[in-house]
Image (spheres, rainbow, N blue to C red):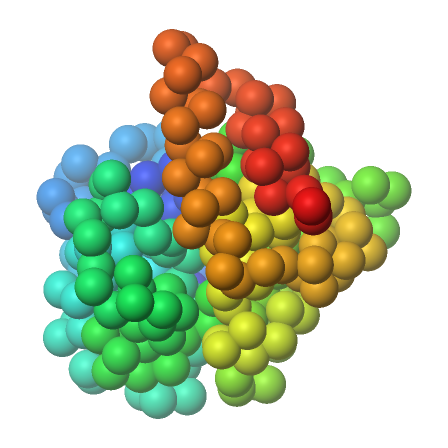
Length: 246
């Protein structure tokens, strides 16, 4: 596939590396220009381009930038054919993104993203830790392979996204429609808990929408209280403990 990626942060970087290593034609852009993308991001064959070039003549677009910057991407996608899937990897964290009244009022994160981009999106890659994504890939069929949930309304676009997930070294689990994507937002049992496919399906079913914002903030308070950079184990342990059913 020809894949365009907007964003070269932790998740975007690993996407470029894994997908280009898997044989896909990958272009990546950031907000600062192609010359600022580090060589290691491109070591497996990805190409640094401008944002306009990243979304031109591709089979799928992956948007991996902070949620509060997503409205700026809308004009870039205006010329992208409607049949090209757009994958949204973002999450809402008010302390980083500022408070967004619609989401605070109950609008589902990726529904809000779709409205700002002016087109449907598929939600994927948001519920995996950057360290897990970088370090825990396994071949298809490997015992204990970690799973990533994928939500969206278009069956073909979702199938493309699930194939992309598999190509990065993780099992893809169908998490339902975009309206169901609250089940993989921060503060839910499916979010950043390093689960297998069967475990992830159970976690998605156990999600409590009313508790999710409170859980999200509780995890953040615990991480800040550590007083140091959290490890993958720190994050997984706290997400699991805080979001467990009670």
